[in-house]
Picture 1 (cartoon, one colour):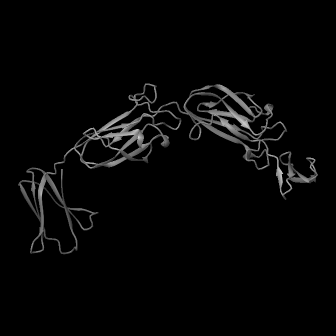
Picture 2 (cartoon, one colour):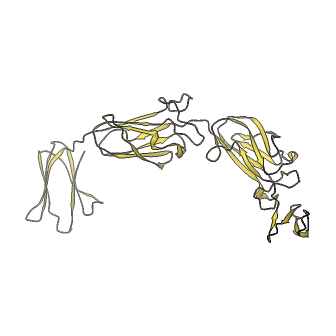
Length: 347
């Protein structure tokens, strides 16, 4: 229920309005601004928090208090366990304060917290300012609503990230155009750029990374120009890459983060020349309309010949183990398709 009265409440000879909010037991004063508008005085709300954390509240070090700044002085007697609460990873936390640091800033203290996880803070509208008005966090000129509660969460993460895996590994055939790496936790993508990557070819020449993209949970793909030279390729990543809390890599897990050499992740893969086990591939169409394919094979090696009409779906037409140096394959079933494609595979 609401009621209103008019009058000159600030002595400027202009009519103002007072609105009573009986359900919430307070009044709103609307002052005449002489431009056909009435401006309500701002009610109390939180304007800043220290520490605010990184990336939405992540902290890398233990903490033993927070500082809340308001737009107006508050009644510290109303700042108590009925209006303020803290829940950490292992349950509720007792606090002391608030200690007034300045006209608008107030410090809440509690024992040093070192347990990793989420700390949830709740400030209820039961808090009042020095004029007796409850919190109006949504600044809609109606203080004390349930929606005027102020919530914030700080997440303590003291564990440094490291690279857990990279792919490809071992010996493989080229070309290779990218390497995937997986981290132990979520990475602040702003701290992971191509400048954090070094790739070297078998001659020791640098291969510039051209792009980094997220391809899965904590997994990134590092792209570069196609590489075909046989030999060992070396990958180096870090050490300045950080998690959401700002912890740099600790690849050797010695508790000293971001070491210039020891915390660099090192990986490698080898490009090898592939022996397909066949050569002298010769296709031709016989006068009968049959398709004939000949090739030189390795005696005792298994082969398969596959056929497709669209280069997408392949069907095996024969499997065999070579017993001769030259193999001849004849396909007499060629009349029902305008196009047929063939390929030879081996193990």
